[in-house]
Image (tube, rainbow, N blue to C red; front, side, top):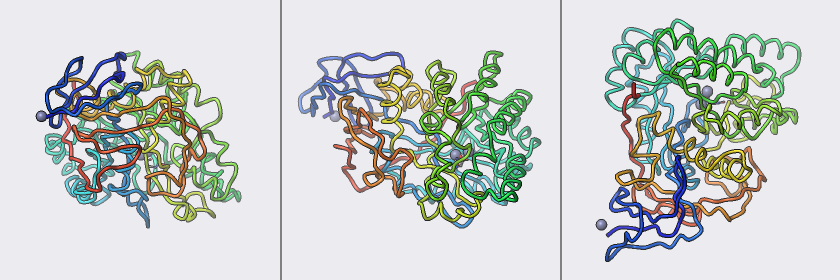
Length: 458
Ligand code: URP
Ligand code: ZN
Ligand code: ZN
Ligand code: ZN
C-alpha cells in the first residue's frame, strides 16, 4: 500500500500546479489525480504546498576547530535539518594536514554513521596537495564523492596557495569533479587583523573590518582565473558581496562553467550586528563576515535572476560559551552561524512572501539546483515519479516566531531570534516515510542514508 498526499499545490522549479502525489515504498510513483488504490493512506492537504525535500549542500557538523568542535553533531544537525524541511545535507568532510583523503573521509563516516536523521553525502575538503593526494582522488570520485573544497582563507590551518589551487583544479576537472572554494584572501586578512589588534581594536567589530568586501572580491577574481586556466568547473561557496557577484556574472557570460552559492545570513543580516560588541557581536562572527546594509538587496536580485544558483546555510554552530573564547581577541572567536533548521522558512517568508523571489526560484535554489550540481538529481530535488519520496508539506498560512528556545539545533542562540515568519513546515516525508509531524520528529531512530553522488555532468 502507498501514501497519497491529496489536495495540495505541488511546487517545482518550473511551476506550481494542483495535483495529488502518490508514494509507494521509498519513491514517488505517480503525480496526478485519482491515484488512490485500495489500502492506501490518503492524507487531505487542502491549502498546503508540497516542496521537494530541501537539499543543503553546505554544512559543518561536528567540525573540529582548534580546541573545540562545532556544537551540532550529525544527530542534532540532521534532526534540525529534517524538522526544517531539509531531507538531504552534504557536509564538508575534511582531510586535515597530514591526513590522506581516505583518512579524512573515514573520519567523517565515523561521525555520521548511525546518527543521521536525514540523508547525507560528503564533499572532500583538502588542505594540502601531493602526488599521493592526486592519485587517491580517482577512487574518491568513483566512490561517490564528486565535489571538493579548497580554502583561500584561514592562514595557518586550512588555507592553500595558488599553486595548490591550480594543481588541484586541474586534477578535479580531469576527474569530472566540481571544485568548491572559500574565496577570501587569507594573507590580507591575517595582516589586517594583526594591525587592528595592535591598534587596540580586539572586539568582534574587528572581525568584519579585517575582511572587507575587497578581500572576497580579489579572491573570487583570482579563483575564476585559476579555474579557467585549469579547465575545472568552479562553485564559489557563500558569496557575500555584490562585487564578487559582478565578477561571477561576467565570467559566466563569457562561457565559464561557474556557479554561485549564498546563504540566508548574507541576504537577511548586516554588519551592524558587530557594533554591539561583546558576546552579542561575537555570536555573529563568521567568514565571510556580514556586510553593509544595501548589499543584501543586491544579492536578492542576483538570486531572483538566477546569477546565484544555490542557497545553502554554511551551518557551523557554536554555543555562546564557545564564542566567548575570543572576547578579548576576535581572531580566536570560532567562525560560523547555525541555520540548517530555518533555511526554507526564511527563504519562503522573506523571499516568496515579500515578493523578492518567485516560488519557482525558491524551489530551484533550495532543492533542485543543489541536487543537480552535486550529482543527486533526479533522485533528490524533484517531485516526480521515480524520485525519492522526500516531500515537505508546507502550510503557507501559519505564522510563527523564530526562537532559540524552541529550536532543534543544539545551540543556545539563533541569528534570527524574534523574527516573525510566515509559512511553516508542517510535516516531512523521507523516502516515503513520514518523519516529521507538527514540527516534531516522529521517531528517535536515525534513518538517514549515506548518498554516493555522481560526477559533475560535462
Ligand atoms: O565562518 C564560517 N563560515 N565557518 C565555517 C567554515 C567556512 O568557512 O565555511
Ligand atoms: Zn505498496
Ligand atoms: Zn567557508
Ligand atoms: Zn563553510
